[in-house]
Image 1 (cartoon, one colour):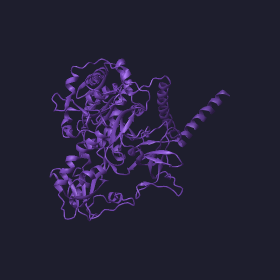
Image 2 (image 1 turned 180 degrees about the vertical axis):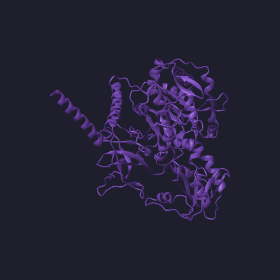
Image 3 (image 1 turned 120 degrees about the vertical axis):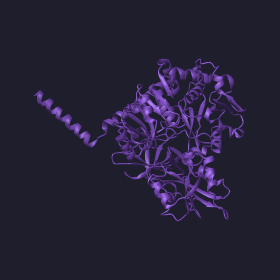
Image 4 (image 1 turned 90 degrees about the vertical axis):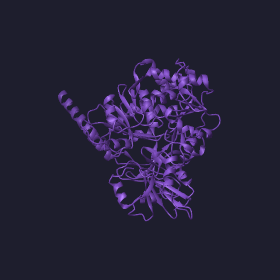
Length: 619
């Protein structure tokens, strides 16, 4: 009797397992992932109940006590332990305590390339309770001034290799900003932080300076192009920094991992997910000043790297490298990032071995993220009933001609069907707030949608189009509005148009992104109308964009038009132009290509067009 009962039980278990695999194939993967999300949320709430709000900085200080001699940052062969970083950041804090009027809550802008001092200054200022604004190290001139003005800093700290960039704008800096340089020799009007660090105390800074009463308090400003205009300073709260730091842990990284960070630290990926992630784990990071495809795998072998961060373009660059012997001879087991195409993903795995690609989706200022915990190729994540209980989001229809969400006769937004691209929007509520941008409130308001499905509801507009398939996997499809992505960076079209429009022979400029085969993102293209009786100076256009724009924002293509189409609200029409692309076979307007060797734009001939398509000419 017992034997038959046990046999029946076993058969039932096997049947249920088979049924689960058939009907709910991702049940256990979803279950363990959501368990981690809930666990982390409970941990944060427990700290709140105890009256102990633990920030990323608090976590770091705890690790500096528990594992002082463990390597935290490895940079160009030099090892910086948790204790080293703690002491150096305390020196930074004491310099500002003794030689400035900075106080808790003040903002300090940081313009620095990837190097340990980026973290030292960041943590040192955080120890004083200051908000740190990370400036993009590629921007210059008016764009840099704009970023500095909109976050209203009391001080600006500049890396040794970027002091020349700041010298250009020193006379135009707003009053009251003190400039500190990480150089021994600095120009008039700049104080040498490096010199003062050599004599500063490395004693711990009292916790009273940085203890927080709310996790909603600002911690950082990270600049993002958003969907329109010049860069905006996204407010990163202590809560967002904590959530970002949990990403590596959620994907299965541990304290024993060695994480390779080649992404810029002024981005949320490098700073929050990378440095913050290492702090959350108590792990070691290998920090690279700048990504190098040729040195990448040598670095991984040299430092025993087990995890690296990527953007899609990075993986494509690695796949384009000449094949070498022993390419699978490394210890890398995980890669965490976003934006890798399915074909590059497959090629990467085939060439470099069994590395789990942990693709994710998230916006710097957003209140929603997805993580591809199953490893499904091409997907940015997966949703299900339980996930939507924790994070309320929807994909809605978008009118590309009107450049706004489509609404029905009752005025409500319309859900898209599975398999159709839709605008990703996320409910704004107490659990998932949207903190907006520093400065003008209109930028924050522009990112919100009101009365979406019912009166009074509020949603964050990501500006991204996603597709959800029948198995509830999500795939990135495209961007809307006045931003496109190139070389891993967001390009604000209005910023580029403003720079080109400064030329005296340009009447109007319309900038948009066009698809180029085998390239991630979209290459910049500018459609131009010349002023009456003015001629086009291609060398001047080249000089203008190269002088005032980051390299990734310079338009690769020009199109000269006689008139421009506008929308019903008089916005320049981009959709049709982007669809037409840059083919001289389809477009009768004069077309030009950016030639860095000739330092000018040159006519885009059919021969040159074919060379671009074949990859013989690099963009």
